[in-house]
Length: 77
Image (tube, rainbow, N blue to C red; front, side, top):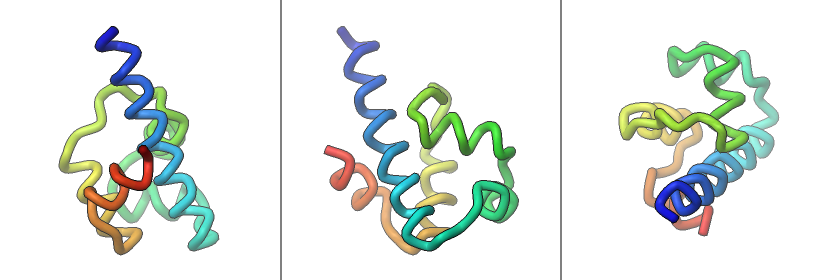
């Protein structure tokens, strides 16, 4: 049950990050380079398949998009 809830949360967060990226019309490569991760990691985060999402990574992505972690999480619910 916990795995299902975690997957739903990660999927929602990933979808919100994808929405932010599309709103800015940024490429994955641009975002990934800016926050210091690979395109592969960003792709898996956006698809909800990356299970090692850290607060530090969310802070970097939120900062890049000009939103807070709270906004990303609340918009994903």
